[in-house]
Length: 293
Length: 339
Image 1 (cartoon, chains in turn yellow, purple):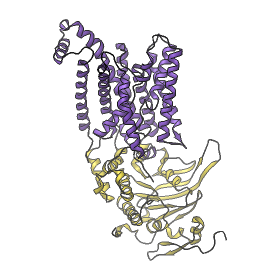
Image 2 (image 1 turned 135 degrees about the vertical axis):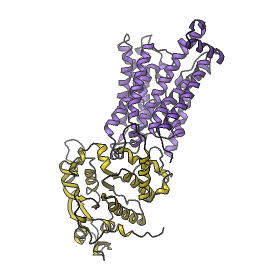
Image 3 (image 1 turned 30 degrees about the vertical axis):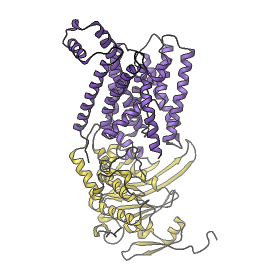
Image 4 (image 1 turned 90 degrees about the vertical axis):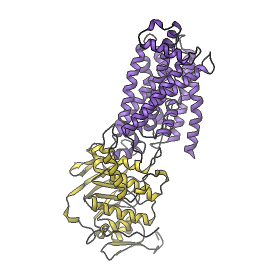
């Protein structure tokens, strides 16, 4: 695999983090909380405590945290597929969970972790599904829908995959086609749940750089749930750090990436240094001491 | 990319309608008393042009009174079962779903028999009872087929097949111990049969309900395409999942109840026909629903013609024909999925 240059436009401008050009808040999460119960009236199995953050257009927000810290729950709250028990989750002032599914899908696109298909589909047709919220029932795709779907494939660099079957694509190729379907929705907000999972490092960097670029070009608000500390530090404007259902920090990478904090949260020996562009870098150290010693 | 357009959908339907017309002519011709194509054409022309006095009594009796109503019934049942099968396949995200395999047909049959026992003088209630039987069965199978809150494909099929076997035993029990003489035979409810003609009034009510239910499913066709990639994904693509599932659940149960109350439990049509249609024309539900309806009509009329002729002058139940064709396909699809 040849090394890809990260396009200049894909790199965040100026000092890392901060609110780009003072754009208006698009996604507003205010003291939102949620809890899962196994049965009715039972004690909650998991609780996401009051979380607050704002995201603007052209901004890339990364939600970080160890397993079972509430990352996906927070993402689903933003997506509006679940309603917060307390607090508010708003998109341009409307509560996302109260929008009807069609309107919501015109504004918010979600890229999920795994998607299985019952019947085989070609990549081109798969991307066309993204046009569904813009059509009505008993509707057939118009010329415009085909153009938009085609452009979406071009934007993720997957136009050559158009006629391939989804189940024959590699992990990285599939992830790009799934992303293209989300782009075909022409959303305002792009949500991704661990999009870099199962991708090799080249494809990971490629994907994150592409998201960065898309946020700039299409004025998206991109919110990514990820485990990749280094990738998030390199590409995100804002980090939301979760730990066991608590929102610990919200802010630019340089402010959130503090060695002690990260070591505590991720229970791993880490070292944080500041790179030349002012962005933190995370290094893994060998065990310095016996665990629990 | 081969775009699916309204034009392609319409032309595919026109093609299948032509095939259906051919199969209908074949079915009219063949039987214990065969007619030549020339006779058939001549007599049909006389009927159509109002010279009905020239039509022979034989022809009138066999064609108009027996074969033609039976063909209409077969078309209706086949179309209803295929559309119901395609609907259940999307609802349960399982390409092996079929009203018969899932036990829904047997549930409808139990409902129909119970209504006949309870109110033998009131035949209008039978389809309603069959519908209720279908609804209850699919709900039961759905909940039995869940494992840890997830719909598990294998468990679902097992639950369906076991329910079918259980309900068949109930049917045999009811028929042996309780049935009065005028309720149709056991083979009718277990295998399906088109030999009992319907009163014409009832037939037209069925036509209306068929178009209402199949039409309701068709309005959700583009949603069903997305539902097949998962409920959460469909929701994120703007599908009102709860509404769509309810529409398909009720409509597919109506179609199954309709088919079973007039023809018993004909199996595998809902599995076989949508599968063949998908192989020929792709799996887009906007094309699949109307073509499956036509294909189902073709399949059942054809199977019934075979059932009437292969062992003439006696007859096989049409369900035996569809099971002979359908069961191997089911096994093949199951093994293909497992590998």
